[in-house]
Length: 403
Image: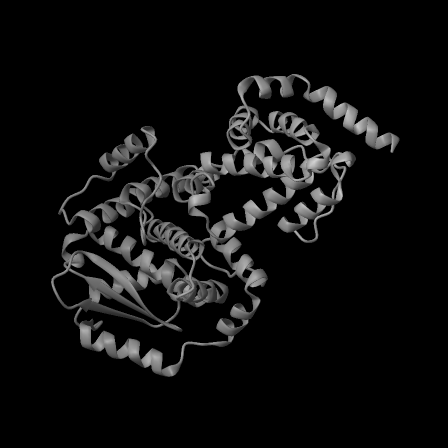
């Protein structure tokens, strides 16, 4: 991967990780979109749409607004030509970017200039200008955005593509909120601008709203359900945490946007993580030499063609498996059960080993419940097997050593 761009703020880890994943695993798509520049006719289409749907705010007629925009641009180190527009229609308060390479075109919606204070307006402009800098100053971000958009609009798109695109966009909005703070130099102004734009009210107390956001987080209901933008309380809280305690902002933000890794809502990075953890689990299950039979090795290679047993311990496996949600914990148990039943010539010894291994991995009670259900075992049968598990495994290992 090329070195990261000299943006005013470092790109977020999620953006960097998605870029690296797409470069490594979608190399043909990456090459195509890297070569596919925004065509001249597309640029002209954007320009024409701006002319048709907005009123261009000329510097001579709106000097104060242009002064604010120039100040915002200077604070972000932006030197590209800047043009401002007012959207037609009476929609709510907002601002948006119409992207043209090398040119910053910002569109104001509703009575933003009347409703916001000068400092709040600078915050809004800073947010949108950071969107431009991401697209224009970091070519890998632009390519990744285009690939994710193409994936989600493809007829063969899978939920994992939509989830990745959604999270990529949510992280982008939080990142650009930091541009609002950077330009305004004032947390309260950046937060009150968010609240005003989302509610339309004339006056907003940032301090009051931040307390409200803290109350929501305190009740444990902080994971975002936003599709294109996180909820305002999420954005306000994320901005304050980043401004006051940047060392813990990444972990909290990941919990809010991604949550615990879940089979029901995997993104491309989570899919890769599940595959890696599954490989580690299968490798751990096959660590004893007596379990490396042809049927079990063949079963393992249905998961991973190149898998080879390893005698090395995996000290963090239990902790890493525990990071998932309930369905993912069940999945790990079913993987263990698969290998307990894949070689019937070994009789009950693999199941005994699975009972011991699941206990080591912190999955003991869950595995026993699933094994009893799927194998039709009564409690007495399972209790007896568990009681003799260690001896049975030792005997199997000893027999293998003698052989």
